[in-house]
Figure 1 (cartoon, rainbow, N blue to C red):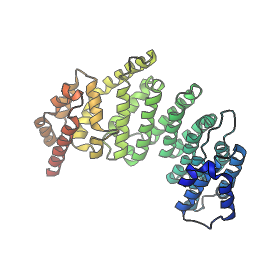
Figure 2 (spheres, rainbow, N blue to C red):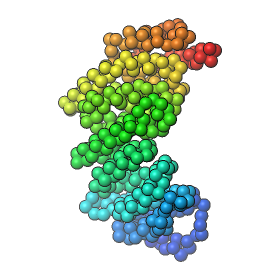
Figure 3 (cartoon, rainbow, N blue to C red):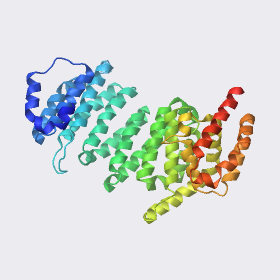
Figure 4 (cartoon, one colour):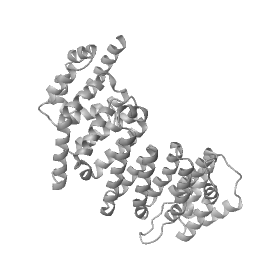
Length: 401
């Protein structure tokens, strides 16, 4: 595979001819995929018409199998075929002018009805949804500009599938679309519409913390998607007070989930939201306007946010989200401190008073309220170390009781 990838242009047609003449018998899946990937790298160096012909040849057996798939099909075999198609799309990258067809995208268009057939045959399988959406993802990464015209129909498709199944992979691919196409004005409305549909469906399927606990993987994908939306195009989302109120209330509840990635996703959303309040001096007037809106949203929910975070670091937070690189209580608290709310000390003290008696005693002994409001921690010095020690003492207190 490595030889074909780095020497693809030199190998060219002779490598494909050798494979045709000496095609091996059925190989173990990992070896089969590596061989297929290597040959696809070679095919990607050929002229576009020849490249597409080779890709169709490679895809043929899997395409035929998926064209006949039914609910009674062997799910393992179907996933193997999807892995092969993913390898083809992923490894067929090449530079092609936007005005000319891209071989990988031409193949992907032909595969779309087959991928949809798989989803219809296995509507309740999240594993199958994950395999199919990986094909979408790699097609988008392979040729974003050639994929872009498909985004309106794909966005509608993803929203429909998520509404019907609440499977997280559809949200993940929605985030890929946002990351690739956020700066293309003609697709902003489509992406916003997709986000609205996802949000409606998410809270229909997960209306309370009870459902959050039952489906933490969906919470994870949803809040990572919202965080990405805030990173790239926050304006349309934060302008809706109703939506932001729902998102904030759910995030505050979601912080207490005993699921590492779901908790990190919620904290990533909060960190991204707080970062919007600090636009660069050269940012546009619209960006400064969005920053003011977000500052108001955070202030409105500030006390409840602080209360929940104090409860979590006093015993409800998983260790990995207490102090980690992406999405953690240390970073989120540090960012909140930088907002310099005059009420922060009072909020912290009231939050401490609402803890269970043993934890309240520990928080008072550790001077938690004053510590979280100290100027020195606004500069980030020692906060992580302090919180780790404090959290450990709270865990010992919980174990003793």
